[in-house]
Length: 574
Image 1: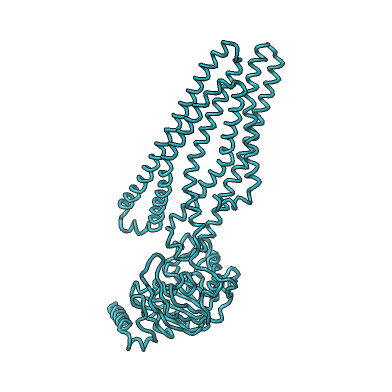
Image 2: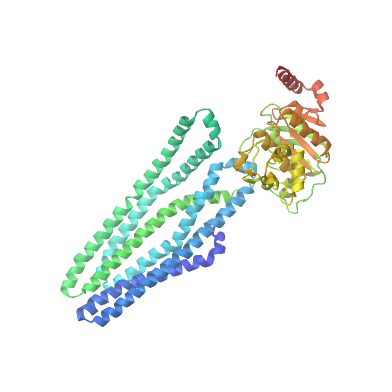
């Protein structure tokens, strides 16, 4: 919690006010049984109606005050608790946004979602309970015990057995429940992962008629979650019967011994009634404390998971006074090697090549030859394990990350559009872009030909993930979004695979004729997409097999020639 407490700063006044108001409520509640004993032992005994009415009004006033203080305490406690959780969630989201690809590989998406939602909600609930129950319960118990001792110190000895037995019961049961609550959070992660995977690929599931198979998989994980929850609950439910047994036993003991004292005249009937009320308040306070500790167990698991993310430092480290501007779009790799975190196997080995600013570089190779990994080192989505990646004459590690990525536009293999309008999506490239600039970028990417047909044009609605667009349309829109950045370097990672050959040729022509100042890297599976590039890099098993233009590679590269001939035969057969 020490790591999280600074996030309470914004709500500190609410956090202070809630327990103060709760203590005032406790004082009001504690005062009522004492007034009741006076009414019985003094007012009723002396048949003093005025005295009874006066104390009765004071009791009503105390009850109303307790209600007001309780409502206010709940209100400001909720503000502090959920406000605190909101600040933690905001910081957690910000932290995740700053993660490198390597960091994101360490956490599953479903786990991060659970931490941002369930864990933060649990934190908010427990914070609210801490400000209220964790204050009310001990203060109520202490003050009620003091009042009970004041009324009859000899009878108050019943608590010497009741309170230790209650505490031992609470500790024993909660210690058994704690590991189950930790396991519960892990099971929630797995269920969320299953839900996310299934809903993301629901069309594939339906097309393969795998609904029953997926239902069975989900049932297994859901049943695991249920079983852990039932185990935890089956232990926790033992607590309430035990506590009630102790409460009733204590009341019976008080009635037994107190009854003799009333008969002997050493204790008033009203005092016995108020003493029993204080017993109830003390034991209920212990019950509330047990409930609080149960929630605290869940929160401890949640806090651990939240702090785990907050303590994770990005693999990408920025240096002080980092450079803000790329001189040009030139790129050079010097003895670059790379392996993924927690792995010793190199996926890139001794990569050496150089391209000038404004050149078009094509990259081709078999699946798994680490083409995508290679280009991800340029905007520092990953950092090279060994060697240097030099952009604009400087090592990429010398640049401010935001400045570097602002000047390197990346169109990933998986095309993602966000819910909103087409204009909203295009402005991801440049939030100040005018409609004319957006339309020009759409024309460059050959997307304007279908966007112009929409009645609402740039205001056309984009559904979540761009589900209302075809694969080829999404690819062209994401290329346009990248072009709006006016980058010095443009990287297309197999970003025209869903586009027909005619449209692909038009896009390549734009890169050659209209975007000469932009260094363009095109990863392609089709020779046609890259054959007009200034130079082509052929990758094989994480190494450079050959490097040259189309004609040179046809003569000198066996791999390139085989790809070319197989695709040429395929085109002829079609």
